[in-house]
Image 1 (tube, rainbow, N blue to C red):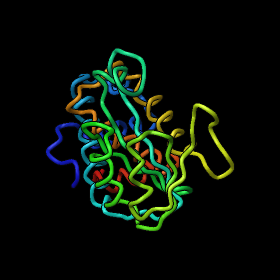
Image 2 (image 1 turned 180 degrees about the vertical axis):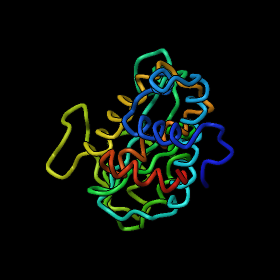
Image 3 (image 1 turned 120 degrees about the horizontal axis):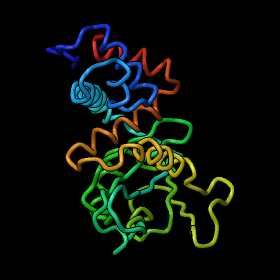
Length: 217
């Protein structure tokens, strides 16, 4: 999948791709390049669609331990993560292979019956998995995984027993998305995959090289 049927010149497309990688907003990029904001916004959306397409091609990659699992909540007006505090928020589930890649997916809820199929599809049995104390992860104890949990009400890490890696990813993702001052829910999965891409593909120079290839620019 590449960006085609774009009316913007190749020079402008290349500059927009560079601005995207450097996390310059579409409106700011449009102002710098002297083009219509909607043109830049649409081009950024096309970049995110390309990213989502290529990440979907490798989504069947199976992780093996040690692996960290965690759910997070994006958007909404009310504070808090779980229960009533999650009202109006988008629920996201993440799986991080330590010293490796992260995988994210938007889910309807953080219940066990929702998360367990994702876990079984994405993580090899007998892998070591680390979670917090959310009850949704209880079934991991009898599902063929070596399960360790950290109780955050008491501590955030006990030697190797922690989920600091996936929580670091959530923090990075929320920093990236905060500057947009609200994201349409139907486009949120594209923004989430952008964050996954940025985390998994290292430096801006590497990201730019990959995106030039993927987008055909």
